[in-house]
Image 1 (tube, rainbow, N blue to C red):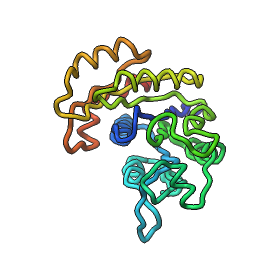
Image 2: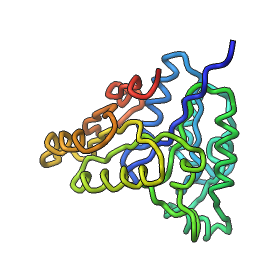
Image 3: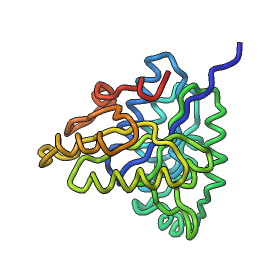
Length: 231
């Protein structure tokens, strides 16, 4: 019997700090509950802390905890940078050079690890620079991955979401689904903004996450419908 094809998605956001990791870990959790073998990659992480095992990023550690396929930290987060700034600037300060082809190689290794469900989480938004000529958006383009967009629900989200989707489609990629994540307890016109996005974005909304002061993976998972992207 042939093995089921791996379901792999790239997770991006309308900005930094919009909840990409919360959504990604919750989706991995839901996939594991379906009996799927899970794996993830956080190709580039800035803002890492020095530990006895080397540089570690909290988001990457959370992702690693939801991987049922055994991975080393360095497989999940191959480029770990200490400064909590834009990745290309952090890389320059650290004496490193990041390229799309190098990151794609790391990702392909995890994608071939035997997992049924793989998430590759971006850094910041869609057009984050990697070096003087390449952007992180070149990675999902190189791997030809469908995209999950996390929309940070706050003032400006309509513009940010539409521009991001336009860029995704201009790069020739498919927006598989999007998630509305409420970042503020009292966003003016929240429901109206949400309704507008549902009309404008060319993909199903797979979840509406209310404002959660301390979001846990299990709590976020309650608001996501993984069947929108998985068989």
